[in-house]
Each structure stands twice: as C-alpha cells, then as structure tokens.
Amino acid sequence: MDLGISRLMHKLFYVEPSERVKLFFLTLIYFLIIITYTVAKEFKDSVFVSVVGKSYVPAAKIMAWLALIPAIFIYSKLVDKLRRYQLLCFYSLVFGILGLVFTVLMGHATIGLQNTNASASRLFGWIFYFFVEGYSPFLVSVFWAFANSVNSPDSAKKTYGLMVSGSKLGGCLSAGLGWYIFSSQLMSSLSDTARHQWVFGITSAILLLIVPVVYYLMKKVPGYQMHGYEAAYRVEKAKSKKGASETGIWAGIVMLFRYPYAMGIFGMVFFYEVIQTVFSYLRLDAAQANTHSMGAFTGNLFKLIFISHLIGFFISLLGTGALLRRLGERTCLLLIPLTSGAMVLYMVISGLSPAAIGFAFVTLKSINYAFSWPVRESLYIPTVKEIKFKSKSWIDAFGSKFAKATGSTFNIIATGAGALFLQVHMIFFGVLVVLWTLTAWLLGKRFDLAVSRNEVIGADDYVKPAEQKAAE
Image (cartoon, rainbow, N blue to C red; front, side, top):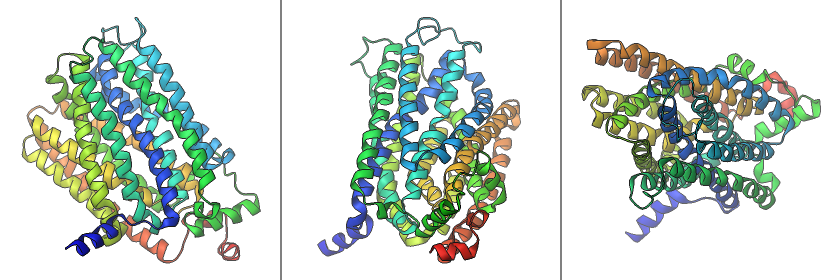
C-alpha cells in the first residue's frame, strides 16, 4: 500500500532536479502575479458598477479592446528592444506603480469611491476598467510568454500543473483576504473606500517584488536550462545571425492571420471568453440583487472567486499534470470545450437560476484557471518568438477583448429577448461549443505533428529549412 502511494506521488509530483530551481522561481513569480490579478479583476467590476453603473458593463467591454490597441503596438516594439526577462520586469513595475496611483485616486472625494453617484460621465471608472483589462495581455500573458520560451513540451507536461497550483494558492490568499475584509466585522470601522484602498494598494505593491525574483531566477538557473524548446532556440539564434531579430510592430497580427495554428489558439481563447462574459454578466445580476452596499457586493464577488481558486488548486495539483502526461495535449484540448459545454447545459436546464449560475460560473472559472490555461499556453512552445510574444499579445488583448465585446453584444440582445431569453441562450451556447470542439481537435492534431517533427511553427518566415538545419 505504501509502495503504491509512493509510486502515485512520484508520478504526480516528480520533477527532475535540474528543473526544480527554475520551477520554484517561475511558480513564485506566477504566485505574486495572481495575488494582484485576482484582486484587480474583481475590483474592476465592483468599482465600475459602483462608479459608472452595471448597465454600462457591456459597453465597457466593447470599448476596452479598442482602448488597448495602442498599448499592443508599444508592447510589440518593446519585444524587439528588450530581452524576455526584462519585458516581464518592465510590465511588473508599470502595473505595480500605476496600481498604487489608482489606490490613491480611489480615496479622492470627487472622482473616487466616496462619490456614490453612479454616472457614465465618471471617467475614473472607465479608465480604471481599461487599466485592469490590461492585466491579462500585458502581465499574465507576458509571464506565460516568458515561461513558454524557457520550457520544452516535455517539461511543460511535468511542471505546468504544479506551477499553476502554486498560483492558485496566491489566488486563494488574496480572494480569501478580500472576502474576509469586506464581509467580516473586524474592519467594519473602516469605510468601504478605505478597505478598497488597503486591499488594492497592498496587492499592487506586491507586483514590485517580481523584479528581484526575476533577477535571482536569471542568476541561479544556468543559461542552457533557459533554452526551452531547443528547435525554437536554434531558429532564434539563426535569425539573430541574419540580423532578422527585429520584426516590427505588425509582425504579431500578420503571423496571426498567416498561420492557422496561431488562429486556432485565438479560437480557443475567443470561445471561452465569449461564454465567460455571458456567465459573468448573469453573475453580476445575482450578486448585486443579494447585496445592499458596495463593500458587500465586492465581498460577494471575492467569495465566488475564492471558491474558484480553491477548486482550481486541487484540479491543477492532482489533475492537470497527470492528464497532460497521460492523455497528451490533443485529448486535453478536447476536454476543455466538452466540460465547458456540460456546465452550459446544466445552467440552461436549470432555467438560469441564480444558484445554477453561481455553480456554473465557479466551475467554469476553476477549470479555466487550473486546466484550460496551462494546456492552452503550452501550445505556444513549438512557435517562434513573434508568435509567442507578439501574436500572443494580439490574442490576449485584442482577441480576448473582441470576444468579450461579442459576449457583451449578445448580453444586450438577449436582455431584450423577453420570453425567448432562455431559448436564445441555448442556441447561442450550442453553436459556440460545437465550433470550440472542432477548433480544439484540429489544433491538438497540429501540435502533435509539430512536436513529433521537431518543427518550429512560423520559422519559415525568417529562416529557410536549409538554414534551420545548419543552425542545428
């Protein structure tokens, strides 16, 4: 019995000694990012609803993807100018410092949270919403681009589940703290505004710790262990020798449309975000209906996200790595739309009741954070730097926000559906899940083919096959 448990633990958690230091630092960085991201993501909705109004949430999602386009071009330029770890440090500093600035502005008597008159003219609510929308494409996405560039497909199967489980602890910590602060009587002497400032200020300052952690990562891990997918590393070296390292601000979107593989990754993000946007809007209705103050509203949101991270911790710790090793990326990709479709079916059958919406939201969120995200991110490993960083920024910024705009447009249409509200949701979700499943199957097939051939997707744009072979 003890021998069987020992073997099971070895299969689930064993990491080669050479990979452990890198895994530790990457997990710590992701842990710190998710602490802040969890708080910012929930504050985005609660602050916007309180300052601007819930009815403007769909419009904000539609406008967010337009507001982020200039930032994508700046990011694409920085990818050419900065090294991978420098890019991660830069955006950690930017979001940490700007987060502290927003913390101060929250306490302003006129533009901040003390002004309880919600209005579409309150620019602070809009700007804060757009700022937080940038966390995913310019902080979380940069981390994953960095991680994908220093890990091979084999190491990703062994370590990504553990790395994500570490981040779930960060999510549990910040969401649990937020839930406690906004729901308990311990800090009831503080105003809602002061509590928002304390939580957002502390978590924003935590981002500044990423810089020294990255420094120690680069110092402690040998350079040869930072190559990642060796074929991609050699292609990058060949490009550098040719002087083709700088590819311009348009390379990401050009390669997104040129390579069906990159567009397939876009599809995986798009279908999830559309469904999640509809779920999230339905959740806001349920949360706001059961609360009577901004603090209670925020506490309710943190409660749901805490449960999501807690469930996600066990999924990523015990399931993600094991499923990737056992089933491979192709089958795991198919599980994403199938499990999401099951949640959609449950919610629709229940008649979109508040309890069913809450359960479906938490489950879908848990699966995405703990399983879907690391599986989807591993798809970038056999690609060139332009797809890893630049196309990825378009997918996570423009693509993700476009998906949210699509979901928000549906929310606006469905609100006016009247008696057909349930039927409209059923047809919409059904079409999305079918298309999502087809995309997952094709994408997984292409990934397996690339890895089996030691192929680098996108390399033919800059390095001819003969030159790639010479570089190897």
